[in-house]
Length: 491
Image (cartoon, rainbow, N blue to C red; front, side, top):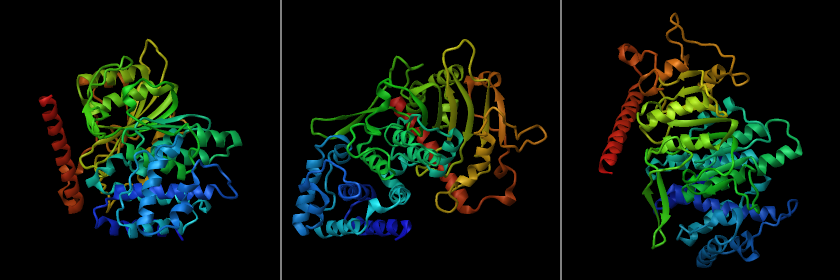
């Protein structure tokens, strides 16, 4: 059966469960548990013969032969018992609960999983199936799932620019379901690797943090299906927790990240009833350049602290990081002083599941302390002005970003050719010197130079659906700004 057919088959069953109030996220979580149990059973048999650490009474054969209330009761007991285990096994099943109360529907889902030989599939096939389910889950914007799903073409473009190499470490302080790791893995695995490099790629390359427990579970399973991490290992590729709270204990060669939307930093704790709650946090780390409650500014400072000297970063950040005064200006000036900020990709609206997002990708290299600023010039690619994307009718594809990748020149970014000039004012690729940038009000990096055709060419406007989507994006962005201002006034 094809990848698409298996994905569709498993996903179609979700519609039945949704009638009973089981959302995409809960459904995907149950698939995670069942897939893990099925694959653990497959790995325990020839030719793998792995010790998966699963007690026989909670292994897949004991579950798959049951029906009715007996199945439901045993499944609940299995989740509870495995949640107490150590390593990846325990992390996947921590606080796991059965959300499918109808034994007949649980039995049908078990059979759907049981029909496939998952370990016999190619890594890409089974990984693509799970990625397909994650993307469908992300489309359920009402649940907020889309907030941790970065468009895969954007991730691929960022990885294509950084070109991560074997035997190097890659980190993401807000890794969601692990999308950046998977793309980096594919890039490295495509190279000719020896045994040591393959083992390093599988077990020692990736270091992620994720605040939301359910998302961390999805991420661990996603990585495992793509052959990242070991089932019986105690070194997990994803750590559950808030990465902003402490200075990193080690540094990394690459950071690829899309920190979560929203401006407030928060800390999550467990209340007396055992439920998780969030509380706004004014992050005050001694290694930061400035203290602020702006989450994106804190993540940017944190990412700088994560990099080795010479380490490279590509980070998705909203527009306010480029122009905000106060702490924002301090962070921008320090970033250009202590790192080499060399590239800014301005992204269009309509590419994220969360509406109203205007974002950019900042590319920079960490440096050692020096008297003079490390940033000499910053190259901008404007992929926003006169660019119209929607999630369904005109989604962004990797081919749309190929011109930017070519301009970036990953093989030697010190040899670039400007597309903009006084004679070619419509060029999207333009260079600004450090002196020009720091002389701007508040050292603002919020730059555009292309003419917006919608303001002058009334005969060639985008189709009504695209215009409506853009209006909604702008209104959502404005509303979010007003909410933020109101919240700050209340505080």
